[in-house]
Length: 307
Ligand code: HMG
Ligand code: MG
Image (cartoon, protein in one colour):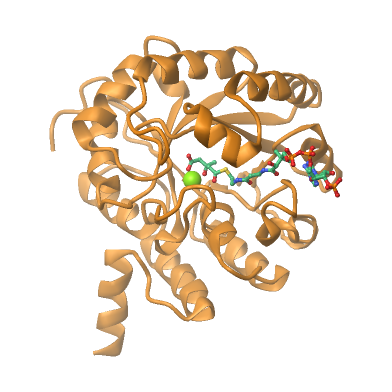
């Protein structure tokens, strides 16, 4: 491990996104009961943030159509945040109506991806989110801003880091307390990920930057380590590596939470997350979905259990 050059603090905030980013990509909608049990297990395992749904158009993402129901049923644990994605004012209103106190808004660094994912240009998306941020701020709802395709777009290829930095600056100015860099299709490699952090840190303070890496090319953990070394301390991951984006063909799930926690524990960094608890939550959902986990650590656990 290289030196923790820009930050000496060892606390890492791990944000679990499997229930939203993971389950949005399933062919069928997972029932409210199963989602609620998964969310509660993840919170019990010590995750401080468990993204629990998305108030997007059910025509576009039917898998998130039961988000109201999910929020009505979860038992919220003190100190845990349960954010939801919102694509517009209507999404924010739906979220607020079921007691959501933190939302994620999402834009892209590529025009083609923006058009496919939210059916508007990048500039239009910024204008669409301006009133959402103003209303959320007025209602004391916390806002994270996601920028997708930061290290590559399925339709346009390489993305200019300068554009990513500019968009992060705009989101921060609009009231996002954190901007999260989405490698939506998981094409990044460590040197490029680290260089992107350096570029974005010229636009927003380093503690504002989060990362959200998908693992399509098996680089998510290495990219994360490179960003930790740059001082990033907020990391999204998905239990069992569930996930993908319906508008990013071929992209796989996020960095697996189990693999991230194993690495952080090994580095002596503190996340407050219990690895056994996350592995158990992962086994619960992969059993339900009848599939092998994408997490290497979860596979080791499953092998030991079977032996
Ligand atoms: P649109 O079709 O351009 O706009 O959708 P619209 O306003 O004409 O709405 C179409 C229909 O949806 C209408 O219904 C609206 O009422 C309804 P109709 O009149 O046809 O019956 N509608 C809604 N319904 C419920 N809740 C709402 C809502 N808004 C409109 N909030 C829109 C535009 C943005 C709504 C649509 O494109 C959409 O919902 N997109 C969501 C896409 C999505 O969820 N993608 C995955 C999440 S992003 C992601 O995974 C990336 C991330 O993980 C980071 C990374 O990996 O990079 C965050
Ligand atoms: Mg994602």
